[in-house]
Amino acid sequence: KETEREVKILCESEKEWLKLLQKLPMDIVYRILQYQGNWVKTARLVCRQWRSAAELHVRGVRVNGEFDSFHTEERRRNLFSFINRCKYLQSVNFRNVDDIRDDDLKSLRLCLHLKKAMFGGCIGLTDKAVRHITPLKGLTHVNLAMTGVTDAGLFMMALGGDG
Image (cartoon, rainbow, N blue to C red; front, side):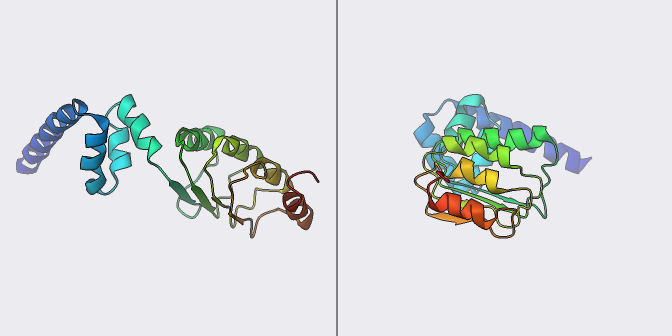
């Protein structure tokens, strides 16, 4: 019972803290939360305005297929919807995510600041995926190792998608 009471008090104090933070200007909130470690996750839970502000500060997304599964279209759609809301995203790293498909990468065209696109071990990707990432002119690093992308797809990428 003592533990339950402590948890309830903690939850109440957290609610009060979040109410207070909602009244502050977003730049101050960012400064406060940047010291909390994973502040983006925390801020996304407060309200839509905070979620939007937090997502503007996301610079990289990493998904490891050994721990995460995106076997349903809804999960993939949610993931790429989140990625598209991160306006200043610079890197995506999908490692061994078998469930990612070529057409899922269409939405990456909206990531204008993307510099790194890592898809090592994503066996569901083929030459068609190259068509979706080639228009990203800011890319400096691309990893397509252990995917279904062939030499023809790499050649198409080298030609800038005109192949």
